[in-house]
Amino acid sequence: MFEDKLLHAQAQVNSEILVREHIIDMTGFSPANEYEQYIKVAMAYDRSLKVYFYAEAFHRLLSTVKGEPYGKNDIADHFHLLYISGSTAIVSDDGLLTSLAEGSRIYVCKTAAEFRKMINEA
Image (cartoon, rainbow, N blue to C red; front, side, top):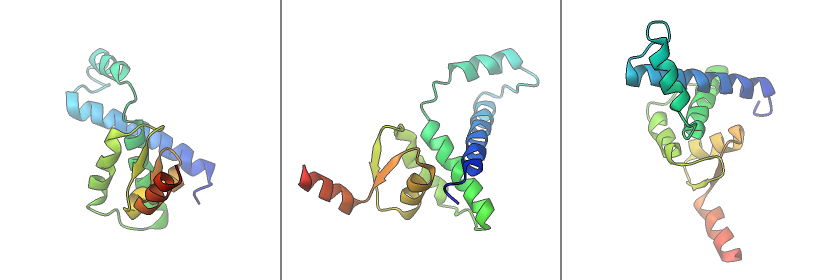
C-alpha cells in the first residue's frame, strides 16, 4: 500500500487542506469572506511545517484506508515532526514515527539502535 502513488497524491492534497484549515483557525480569515487577508497569510507561509502536515495527512488517510482507529495520542507523536525538515533525521523508537517515515518517505527516522550503530561505524 505504501507504494501506491494515488495514496501519496491524496495525502499531499489532504496536507494542503490541513494548512488551509490551520490558517483559518489561527487567523479567523475565511477565503470566502476575507479573501485578501487570507491570501496574505497563505502566501507568507514558508512551508516550514511541510513534514508535520504531510505526516498528519498521510496517517489520517492510512487509518481510514485500513479501517483502524486514529489513536488519541497520535497527534502528540506528530508534534515531534514540527521541528524537522525533509532533510533532517529524527531518532525515535516510537513505532508510529518510524512507520510513517518509512511509508511517507518525507523524513528519515532512525531507531536508537540504528543511530548508535551509525555513530560507532563513523
